[in-house]
Amino acid sequence: MFDAFAVVLRESAELILILASLVACLRSARAGHLLRWAAGGTLAGCTLGAGLGLWLIASDIDPRWTAGLTFVLAVGVLLMVSSMLVAASTIRSRTQALLEVWLERPAAPLVVLAFCVVVAFRETLEVALFLRSQWLRTEAGDVVAGAVLGLVGVACLAIASRRISTRIGLLAAFRVSALVLSLLSIQMMLGAVAEFVHASGAAGMPLLAWAAPALPEGRWYGWVCAALMSVPVVSVLRSWWRESSA
Image (cartoon, rainbow, N blue to C red; front, side):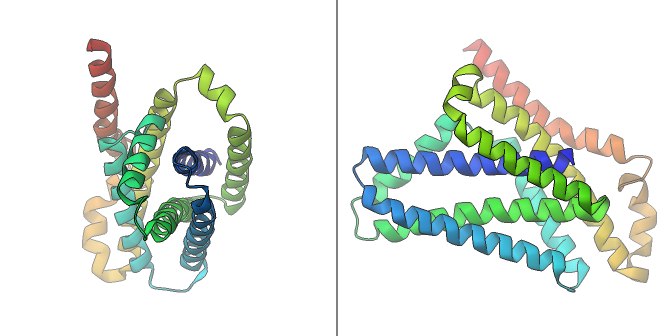
């Protein structure tokens, strides 16, 4: 339940920050006419991501394919979190850089639309595949309950965002949530490997015999997770050290 809650809350909060930065930049540039393109792109991206995620969960497709997709996504999330700890200021600066290049061009509406589609699709699909991975490992009711609580938390966060941002540093909050997301990504990677091996049947038995201790429920599973977590933890500590030394 906590895993589902953390994933939904973190990914949704990141999406809200990106869209809020986009809206703020459009208003400051007096380009309010592009807001409807942003809304349409966000709706389309969320719909596409949720639709693809539900299809992957419900469809009777080769589990090796879904396991491979899940593994690639988990690796991508882990690398992104380790190399780019997102903060509100970083999101705003990158959004402003994008708008400065395209805002005065005729293609600006399409760029805003495509930007929102890609961002919303990525965040929604990440949530869907994370939840699918947890669905395979635990009780479905717990996953659903955690996701619902995450959505409630997102609503509360959206309403109280200004007050919260004055009391806690957004950078620190995102770093903590990045570590949680890193751990969930590592667990999803190892779970995807186990799913792929089991789906391979007899062909995967030699790999299963070799890797089983490092996979979920194996005796080395916790140690492997801890070893892989050293990458994002070192990244966070390095960032804190640089800031304290500056």
